[in-house]
Length: 436
Image (tube, rainbow, N blue to C red):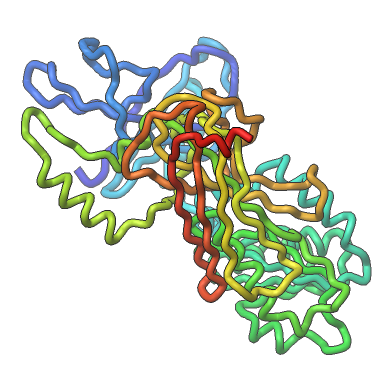
């Protein structure tokens, strides 16, 4: 059926505010209902209870549907949930039992503001991160004055309007993406900042509007760029800044000042399975298939891939270690090579190395913005990751049992010509020199 709707009567189990509908499905595969495929979360059982352990699946996920309006409810209150779908999507509305006929507008919720088209949920989460925003506001308040001529280098960033609200004389924003640019222009119009802000598509447009005697005195960014998949790819900020250096005052401040790439050895609960060989399936040997996939992967796949690690539990096998630093007040010139060793402090199966960045806004550690662990790392304990960015994961081709008699070695190469960073990690036995 192309379109369908259903009404379900509910009774609330507690006081609170209903915000979302959390949904999954169970697929009955046989007439007797004994074989069921389910994408239920780990805390929910499928229709049958003959499974001791629920299988991990990353290709079938649960879904969260936001209600058009939050609904305050009281314990044991009668509610009506209306569920609808068309050829492409589901949507839900929740009403109080006594009012649902009067309030029952169940149109398909389509974004009219543009924000939800321009940004994904991860980005919207970052924009609403109070701790992160507090750090940006604290730094901008310190450096923005009534004489400041600012340049914001980020896609879809609210830092430009913020600087204008803090009293900057002029704020230029370079935003190369039409969707994000239109959202920011709407914010500017809503806050009546048109006289102090100019949103530009590219560097050429900046060169046409910046006056030679009024050079930029403050350059800032989150930084965030739509095309960045891995967190360190946002150093595109550095490249843009260097391209417009002739319009920047010699005494101008740059925020952030730089960035550090961090790494940590980890053991995943399940994520390692996405690169693991099958070996056999229901008694069928998959050796040839495994060889084909491994050969193709070695040619086409990067050893580092982006993953939202807050969704994939893992344990730390080492303390975080820094592997590369960039200083944005310097020019982009020669390749940078780093290498080193780190002692393994935990025990378990090492599946890979987690990678993230920490932005140094102004040299004050209290203002550093990390895309990595949100709490102090404890060895062989679950890592709590930032939810609003993706981290990188370097997967080892062969998993190794490790303990405190092992070390992790790294070699990193940054090529400034294309902004590429190459990573290589190894697991080695502990040598006498490592103990000194």
